Amino acid sequence: MNSNLQDIWVYLSASPLAHLTLTLVAFQIGFFIYQKGKLHPLLNPVLIAVILVVSFLLFTGTSYKDYFDGAQFVHFLLGPATVALAIPLYRQFERVRQSAFAILASLLAGSVTAMLSAVGIGYLLSASTNSLISLAPKSVTAPVAMGISEQLGGLPSLTAVLVITTGILGAMLGPIVLNLIGVKDMAARGLAMGTSSHGIGTARALQVSEIAGAFSGLAMGLNALATAILLPLLWQWIF
Image (cartoon, rainbow, N blue to C red; front, side, top):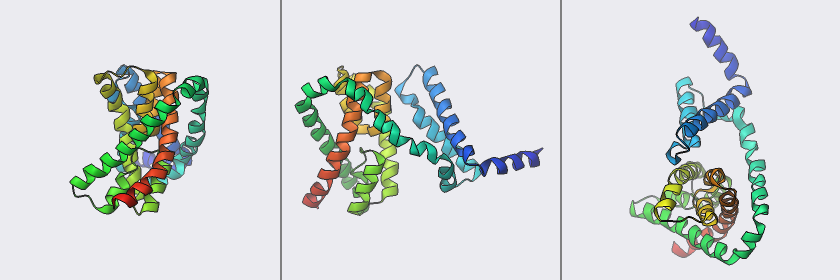
């Protein structure tokens, strides 16, 4: 019996569909738990899915490269999914136009605060220069953050981990913090989520409100642009 199961696993692990299926099943389990928990922010489905996938890979001794070769179709869909954020943004275009100055001011403040706070905390904890560079773009979507980190001499792999961690923590704790400080306007909540926790925070904002999702998607894109321009300038000025 054990031999048969091992043969089945060898067959499945050689198929690209195995790891794609693993990813989808892990997220569905995470989303099921999330719904059963009445959408509690701490039961973030992405976090649960990551824990399940990593545990499975460690248990089976599967390398990340082998996993990614099978699950890369999901990675490919990140592009179309990001472009699709333009739909709720288009529906809120008039409100965005009326709030353009406030959006830009809050975005710049949030972008600079995210960079300087990360670097400042790392510096106080005696982090190396490479680690500080890797920390700085943590609130930007992963492809942009990794590119910035690499150009400045950081560690793109470390940046990727920090970006994902920031996104998950932002999606989990962001709504709680915003409730505690009394931010009720959905546009403001969306801007805060998108600026601080990029795509994962935006997904959470979309679950709450289309307005929050639209402003979060806008903040995510503009924060990536602002960080790509400002971080190299700030880095030269500070160091």
